[in-house]
Image (tube, rainbow, N blue to C red; front, side):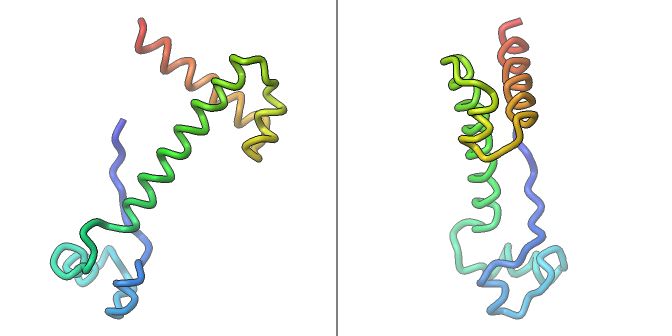
Length: 100
């Protein structure tokens, strides 16, 4: 599942060029024509956060399969036990959906 990234924040390069709205035409033009970076630092951050989130979900299932309780997994990741339960439920549904 690939998601589209909508950049609503301003990176340091934009700030230095007095761009306050990345979704404005000025912001779009800067990003596509004048950005000093070889990649969008904000989009990369979002991609990394998504990878980290997916990794946390996979690690939660791995720990659960090793017998670690949902409460302890929640402590490890500093989230509510309901969040861990949802992660495990969703991850198992993905696995079974792929197999079936």
